[in-house]
Length: 393
Image (cartoon, rainbow, N blue to C red; front, side):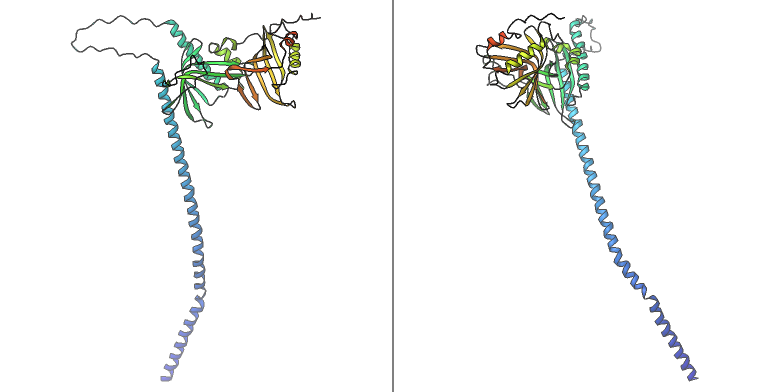
């Protein structure tokens, strides 16, 4: 009995030993897989965290851009509001104040109504109506010429060849308004040869926020010069805005009242001169005097009286290369005691792609070595009568 019990006990111990040894062998790979998974998890987590940081940076950038756009829009609306108030103030400044009718108290003695107000001047009404039409035409012309940096806000009545008072708004290269121009009068100057229109604002100032900058005063004689000790006026001077590469004919047709008489469409030739001969003679005489530069008449449109019309001159360097071009509506030849002066009126100079209107509308070419007598013998407008023209066959 003891032997059997001992044997059973031995077999039981052997079975337990076998079962304990097999389990570890079967479960041995599990710890290896868990170690690999624990090694992979930090790398995935690091990549996820890096992506989260990238997205947070992008989100912050988008928030900053939205805030900047909202700030710019707020500044734009505030600027528009200020310009609108400027226009209202300028319009109210030239409108008479109207007092509201008095309301009688209850129980007070009724007073008969006063006599009706005097009728409005028909001429004043006509000037105001024409001023409104001109303002609409100017806005249309500026839009047609794609002048994006300038907008006419307010315009008054037409009086003495000018429109006023006026308020214009200026824009920067990005289309944002940055200042306003307020002037008593607006008129125009045109050059058909140079294809330019110049807006002339008189007695006014430029307003930038709360700052008012009066227009520059044009050069005057010593006798009429302002007192330097006197305070600067709020409105003064002249501001010119030149529009280059503009056909002046639509402007002349739409708003002729704002232009000078000489700017309007008129005859280019009276038929008394041989135009080809005038051009050839001018070039031959200009070639004799190169002390002040080399000049060549490239084209001319005609001659009326003593004026050569619609002139184009080329300015050449010493090697005959083109330096700049001059365009003028009129050319007048004036003789001096010594030499000659060619005066170009109402035009512009073109150097490369930059067109600049003549200062005060004139450009003078001095020829100190030219002989006035020789030019007179050559039969040129302003110096002699036209030569007899051959009868055409």
